[in-house]
Length: 337
Image (cartoon, rainbow, N blue to C red; front, side):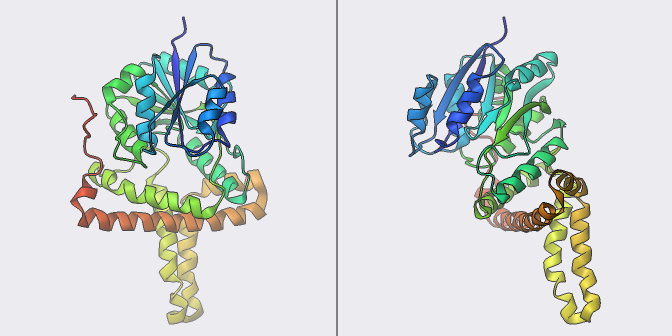
């Protein structure tokens, strides 16, 4: 008999996309699943929608963050495999079957994560289209063994989850970075395009930039302790792209000092930034053409500046705050080795 898969869906005010998510889960080709919706203190109609679909519904009681919601769902699960899906994602019909096949085919793999499609699920604003293409390319170009977890669509054998422990309840953001880092110390963490889903990306730039700023800031203590970047996705080359973009800002002062020859400075920095992720820009050009590429390049420039600003603020916090430096220390739900 096929192993039971417990699909855990953390949800916070996801009424707009939850029906699309649940229909995709109930339309899976894999036959043996249970669906558990964990509401994280929503103020919209999420609970009523979930109950109409006849799935198991539980709650964190108040808004505690995705980590606590996932922990709550796992506590209610009975399957041999836990499959995490965010409520703003619609899975491809074969996603669960593909994930189970990968896990059963190689016992050294402790988790398998999927790749989001390039097209947004809903709200096809220009910003959402930018984020869909950017996130898809960064993920698709990182397939294989990684140390960066993608919990929006990720399957983990329950016995591995028990060994690694829970998501850190102190972390409302970057809990997946911490969990993925812990898991990758003991098992292979696999990123595969065989597991797919379509995500409802942030439709407005302000929302996206705020999220990216805080994620960059909160990664500083973990990366400072590990002394290296995660494998895949956030590569050293992409870090240089962000730094070169940031360096272009003060370089724009050079023409005031050196005259027209000073333009070489910012132009060079921008060229380095683009060259460090040239594959992504070629991908966008092939998919959407030159006009959208111009918008994409400008938006990604602002994203790079935001990431550097987040890291800079995080570095200041790390140097000044012992509490911030200890953000990723073992929490009380982590089992003993």
